[in-house]
Image 1: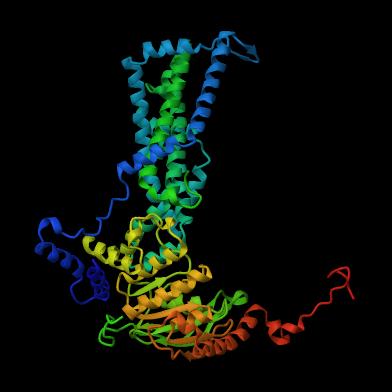
Image 2 (image 1 turned 60 degrees about the horizontal axis):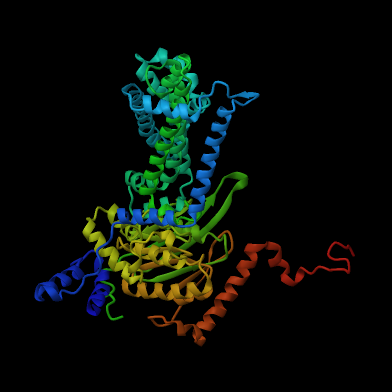
Length: 325
Length: 292
């Protein structure tokens, strides 16, 4: 091993221009060939992939076992208290300004779930909403992230696009409903469009912010290391902005759901929003609550997925000062 | 240390700065940062540029790195004008400039990846360099898991990975504590001893510049001009013990004398005129506020 180490240092200046660039590897190979298999010197460990599933799993396990149990307990109590309030309110039919008179009990909602929960109609509504969300959100991401990177990086692109962005941004996605119905050939497209509008601006603006908050010295360092413009984008500006992009995706996903439900209630056929509104029209009170809970769970699942993808894509954030945890 | 390359033969990396002038802003806000500076770094030479803060030494380095265009004069590398950053000039910055999203090894590989070197070759080179920096066991760590000294060592070998002809260092140890700094200086001379490439090193630390350099350019306060060039006759390789020798001490004294004036000038022109003792203030029994 000692001779290997020396060889490495001798080899270093050879890294440039002339001479055999990998005498170390050559030597290891050569010695391996001479010796019987059992005595092959253990080569230096192969680089371990930085994201391994076991690592992630152990990390999650470590996350659970700590005093975070207390956190979990408090979470259970807080959710339990909400249900208790609901239960008591409906049981005693509370009337103090807010009226529990028509509010279904938790049990009625549970019954509704068992009856309707696995019906094709209900599942189809969920599928429709999820499809609209995914489409709108994906289009918003595909357009928003590259556009945001370009606006963040180039003054001229910024000068061109930002005026339009600033005018459009304050218009809530819901205000787009009538225009959207006029604009698009069918209902489906117009709902996806409204979802897209909801997700687009948070994604765009956070991406721009991500580029701006990137430390300039990293860009200079990359330039010195010979990064061309396109490689600079792919290898520095994009990964450097990623934390902010994910903030944008999480916020965008939230707004996308708000927009989707509103659009479905106003102009929709099918979808969870439509399901909820229809229940109201048909005076099917338990179904209203079921619809609400469904929306909540779907929204939670979507932002959970985004957060998880974020953790997997950006393992370094665990060590960043003031980072996650 | 017998494995240094036979010099001369490969060594390019001649930096030539001629009649350089840099002016920022216009009209009323015009600031002359650098004025009529000429300096050079011979192939394989370690040259320091020392001066008070704000004297334009970092600006000079930015020009040689290709980030800033001079207002007057030119900077040449091996006879060719420098117009933009490139991997023929490795740069080590004062701020930590490792990419936080890349592992230590991937950081060192970055320049090679940009040059289109294949993965296995990049890996070998990066690991050899990390070994040289004594950080091979940290290859899979992220920069945020390392101390400042470690980060700068990686910054140095990352800049060396593409086999640049020159290394430009902008107060690379400025953010480190004194103890770490001294160790880093030794590590740097060690690494340099093996590569023997031209280095332009910016610092405001006198001992550091003497310990590391073959020659030292002393700059004046803004607008930055070259005030003196000092040769450092200490033998190579340099060791920590040398800092206690009379030769070293004499050089420190000489440089201190040169720089003190400029530091005063940089801080406040009035102080330079009146001297520090000219700034007495009577403090009465009721404190400074009392007027005599």
